[in-house]
Length: 297
Image (cartoon, rainbow, N blue to C red; front, top):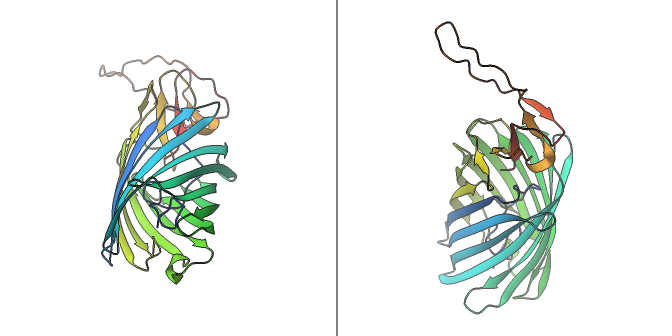
């Protein structure tokens, strides 16, 4: 069994190996490769790769295909899970943002459709470094022809420039033969992100695939900026990363940090050139010649 907050119980794929998704998506043209490996105390095992790209099809849509090689009760299986996600209302501090995603999972050997799902993530940003994610959705487990209500709540806190703490609880409500399938599931993890390209996750989970076991997960994410963009290494303290766009286009949500107009760089008395200063002024507009734009994690 598997999921993506979709359970029943495929691999989850919300934000890397974390289960509860945020309402943000990256900028059109950007891609990322998420991968993780999970091992349970009952010897269950899961190894996942999840490539995704954001494409502008009239609106930005994130397309992904998750592949999962897993062992459960000494039986091996391989599944893949295509998914499409789009943001409906941009997120911001002090307000809710909303998104929608849908997809399905398939057995890689037989091609059978195992599950079909649709989920609505909502994100409320408490500050530039803290947010709450809420998920609600529907899952059809076609292997037993049962329907489930999906739910999840997560809390993210970026407590240093390079470390983020995530706590989450999630699950599925409905009828099941095994009580553990509908029991709540929990994860707590830390993300280390030394730059805008690469991050590493270390996660402890309980009952994350409905098997009543403890799990340890190690995951990585590699991000690729959109064409014409390059990552800026300075951190903003925001939950979202910063992309410097060469052609002056704005990132997610239309919120940019502008630099004041051209300024002469007069030398110091010792002959050194004064460095240009960046002004952290948030502006609602979208036109600027030299600026830094934000895209979500």
